[in-house]
Amino acid sequence: MTFQKSALAAACALAGMMIASGPAMAIGGASGPHVTYPTTGKIGAVNMNPYGIAPLTAVIRNGGYTVTDVSVRIVPKKSGQEIAYKVSDTQVRTHGGIPVFGLYPDYRNTVEVSYTKMSEGKTERVEKETYRIYAGPANIKTAGYAGVKSVFPKATVKKMDKAFSDRLYLINNMIAATPNTTRAVWNNPMGGALEWNRYPQNAIYDTTGELRWYMEPSTIYDPDHLYKAGIMMGFRQNKDGAFTWGYGQRYVKYDLMGREIFNRRLPDGYADFSHALDPMQNGNYLVRVASSDHARPDGKHVRTVRDVIIEVDPNGNVVDEWRLWDILDPYRDNVLKALDQGAVCLNIDASQAGKTLSADQLAEMDTSDKFGDIVGSGAGRNWVHVNSVDYDPTDDSIIISSRHQSALIKIGRDKKVKWIMGAPEGWKGDFAKKVLTPVDKNGKPIKCEDSKCEGDFDWSWTQHTGWRVDSKSNKDIFYLSVFDNGDARGMEQPPMPDMKYSRAVVYKIDQKKMTVEQIWEYGKDRGHEWYSPVTSLTEYYDDKNSIFVYSATAGATYNFKTGAFESAPNPYINEFKWGAKEPSVEIQLESTSGYQAMPVDLKKAFGGK
Image: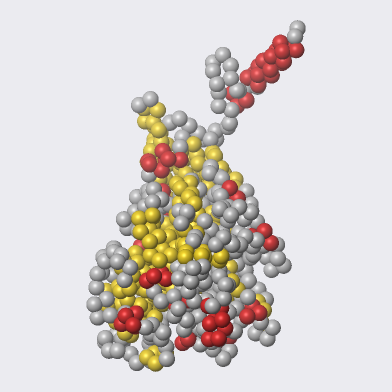
């Protein structure tokens, strides 16, 4: 017998033994191919982490049947939070079965599902089928520093109103800088901001503080790859339930199960996404980027820094752009001279805490060849630092939050400024005419002098997020939610660093009268313990008529004598009933740097009613 015949005989014998061992081991035979994986229920097998980036999800495959009318319930731990949702037939078809979300990590979960099963025209009703699904321990990379105690931050629930007890909160955080995430620097042309790179720490917590979802990003994020690195920022849940965000040179869209809808490089004329990607009502996206090659008036070519907004359609075509150096005054430096140089957004340097740039230092920098993610005037430096963008469909305008101008600015499609919500100092010519006038609840002007106002009004300072409250606004009255970080408040640094505070604020703007009224605030009375020098969010949610707030870099232990941080931040999640002075929800996270956070809507995510 030849070697080939011997090998063939051996293979046949092996196949025969596997067939004889039972259906679960069969790989083929006279009757044709057989499924070799186990099925534990009445349809298909359980496929854990089906798309590779969401380990606490699974799909119960349809097993070749038509499955409709799906409901899912994750049985909670004792005193835990139930997760239950309906699934649209579209989502069942898309995932090839029943999508399971919200498994506890390192736990044998009990999952109850109900559905209608159809095969060859026959319908069978399965009322309640139970699956036991083990999900492994939560595990992603950590910074490895002495202060790190766990892979994901511990969440301590300090206050939870029953009206909010069904919430799920997504946190968009990041671990501390590591050696392999801080090596890339653009130098062709000069400048840019790619040195911003931190390993992502994105997760969803329930209202008992339990982790119920997290992203394992290794298949889409690579700190050693220029076009797969960068800080993940700007998470927004779209109308279709999927999430959009960006990082570095990419903007992406994935659903809650981890299925990729798109993952694109920025168009070639633009670079360095961070902070904001806003889904527009027309189906397009507003993306905060920079120019990848800008020719300055002095002939120098630079990569600009956080000063371009582009509108892209669903196919990735750039249908419009707002080049802010052409629209605003890139040499207004009032706020730049007052910024705490120890906390210029995420470029935190404790050795520079409390220090500011003098007029001479700023002038010297402006005439130098120093470009990039540094505070300075003019294109090619961090002069405007846009950290949010929103769209107003009533007049086809965008609203930007500029940290380094301490201003919220509305700009039309014609690239003309409509109003400026910020202190008037330094705005010249036509810009000065666009600064809103503060008024009290009776419409009477409030006296302001040297960036400080009397009564219950303050401008926002180095703020993050400036979003329109859509359901309460119209073409004349505009409600604006803002997280007022509070650095450089009043165009100065306070005598003592612990005098700083942050606020969540809602303003009411009369766009015809060009006035602004402060109608709600929170945080001033909590002082420095709630102060977030950078990042954070304030946003209105219509489903509960509430204001959600994330004070994302609060709670760090700071040594005012040595000028050093002695712990990572301990951020606060708060949610308020509209107009309430105190929060209905308070959850504190331990030892983590946050960017933003938000409630997650499972009805949107799974299309259920």
